Image (cartoon, rainbow, N blue to C red; front, side, top):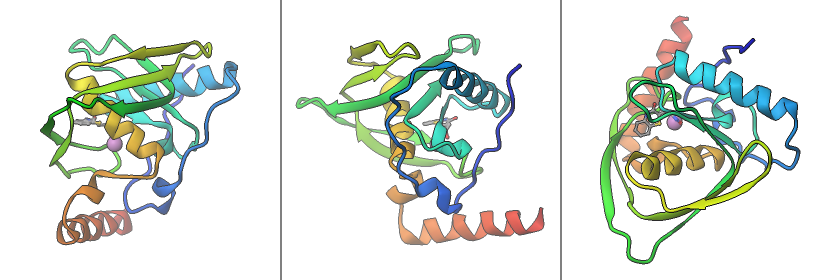
Amino acid sequence: MSKKLKILIFPDPKLRTVAKKVDKFDKSLKNLSEDMLFTMYDANGIGLAATQVDKHIRLVVMDLSEERNEPMVFVNPEYNVNKDHNLIEFEEGCLSIPGFNQNITRPDSIELKWQDLDGIQHTTTPEGMLTICIQHEIDHLEGKLMVDYVSALKRDRVRSRLLKDFNRK
Ligand code: GNR
Ligand code: NI
């Protein structure tokens, strides 16, 4: 059975950990990706990086479908920005920064490479929401968060609010 994992909340310093490459494509990797999908669906998120559940490996899960029935798993995802890209602004949210929604500007055209749970290599040029979401998730694997794209004032405000919430629990 799948297990609900605890999601780390900003400013938890563990969210700043740089994740290690996956080199063992075993049952424990499959189990973790199932637990992460379960946790993501439970939290109504569209993506989740292993970093957010305090597992510091390069593993991301996602489901961008309306019906929430198209789970995707990306192992060791990486991207290059295409030369002819434009910048797009999109209002992002993050399960590790509850109540914080911000317009973030990112390149709109990338070449994405990843492995699946069997270690098979894939490459695509994604479209739409996948382009944005995978950049958000790969940021997590690098210890980077949405708050790093906004002013220090906004960052300090959300940090104070979430620390207060944390101390009330
Ligand atoms: O659930 C999520 N929604 C979202 C919306 C816009 C851009 C990115 C995201 S990812 C986020 C879940 C999350 O925190 N993933 O790391
Ligand atoms: Ni996030």
